[in-house]
Amino acid sequence: MIERVPFGRTDFTVPAFGFGAAGLPADDDASAFKVMAHAVEKGINFFDTADLYGIGLNESQIGRFLKTMPAGSVIIGTKYGSMPKGENGLPGVNNKPEHIQAACEASLKRLGVDVIDVYYMHRRDPDVPVEESVGAMARLIEQGKVRALGLSEVSAATLRAAYAVHPIAAVESEYSLWWRGVEDEVLPACRELGVTMVPFSPLGRSFLTGKLSGSSTGSDLRSTLPRFQADALAKNQLLVDQLALFAQGKGFTTAQVALAWLLGQNDATTSVVPIPGTKRTEYLDQNLGALEVKLTPDELDELATIFAPEAIVGDRYSEVEAARAGL
Image (tube, rainbow, N blue to C red; front, top):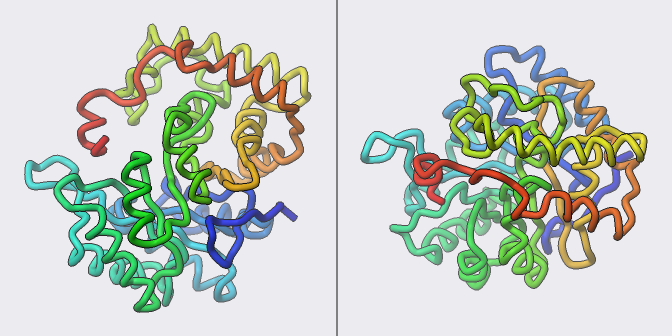
């Protein structure tokens, strides 16, 4: 059975990595249920979703799945705050206390549960003091609707301000060998406060699997991201080629080594719990193989050197996408 690790300073633990549910096929319950059931069978019972994913459809699908499972067998983390459309017609952010209360109640209904295990602020709303937002989230705990609080894609200063209002169990941010921005300030703040780091896109939006080959990424989000543009992607591919050689020498896949590197960032104060997502059981099993990869401190450093921030070409988001994400 998969190892379980502390989750912040809560009274519950989670598996060493969780399951990112955002990419599940909303129109195919049979396929989605198959991979979710397989995850739980393997001990990966920490699911991550958000009210934004499918505009509620992802939560509703998980809710239907939960009806097939024993009560309490799945730990659910979901998020509020990112809006499909803001006042200008573009995706927006809403952290107003009245919205938080309503969003939580809507998520509870879609998920079909009485309590959400981890409730995250999906993005920070600069127009609302974080103290007000976290105060509203804390009231959800008092009401018995939420067990623990989380933040997503926030600065270290925001984390500390939020923690001063109520303990924060986790910060969910993009983190992988290919994007290590959280190491500058956010991860140290998590270590200082005993907050779990939950990396999304731990495989660099599949780039670290070594299967994108440097060709076009099609019409999905990656096609808009600077580091996936042709010239940048070709140069970044050289880093993945080095990762592939390293992985081959260890007898594992590039994806397994990339996940193992993240797991190697755990320490006594902070659990690092990646949430890779997949639609296929075979890929989930491959991800589990990361637990068998044993990396020495020197090997962890070697991989970090290969993927040194200055060696990576292209920003994480375009200016437009960064603005839409509230970053």
